[in-house]
Length: 294
Ligand code: KIV
Figure: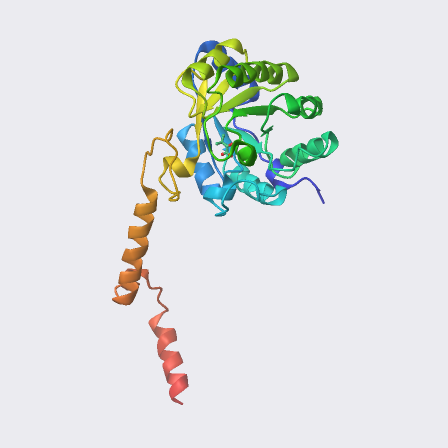
């Protein structure tokens, strides 16, 4: 019997997006559209809509699992959701977000955990947060044949260092450090770089400085692509909406209204209706009634 997990046996689509396609899009000046995804139905919709990449973000912890921040998310939780996304995706590039403490302890552990995203989660690349302090880890993961997306600016796994979800790179000194870090990440082998909640003109300068594409979130239009947390865009996450989000739907209200309508139908005995019933042949019904009457 084959030991290859079934998630890895699917044929890729002919127009499959790869990390090379990311680079080519930047060279052609074509913006790259990325969104987060955490489950099968959302992955299906994202892929069919033509998204370039699905990031299984550790934002999972906040918008799906209800944690206060991303710090409690585990490798097993990430992999569980990666597999669901993989099953719904044919074309988009799949990027798994390495959770807190999965790559900070040692280079060896980081490579093993990055490998799990590909072997057990069906991902095609990983993302991790941080600048110059991550170079050894990035080189080792890339050296193992695993594409890495970097992440600078507001890196949520460091909120305790930042004192909350605050914009980054707003002083000349921190902006200069970010410019240097961006180049170092490119040199270490990252195929792409997320810039989160940084001044738009700084993000544009970084984007022009790098050959690899930058993917902005709250970083202005000068990035080579954009990413948002899908639950923010859909209006599904009710706790807060960051300033940089454009809400394209209010699915929380749509869901709540649908649930209220269902509850009212059940309480008013208008659901289920006749069209929802299944029937049995009259002959069988009659013989049942007859046998019960004897
Ligand atoms: O976890 C996540 O969803 C992210 C994106 C916001 C870039 O890191």
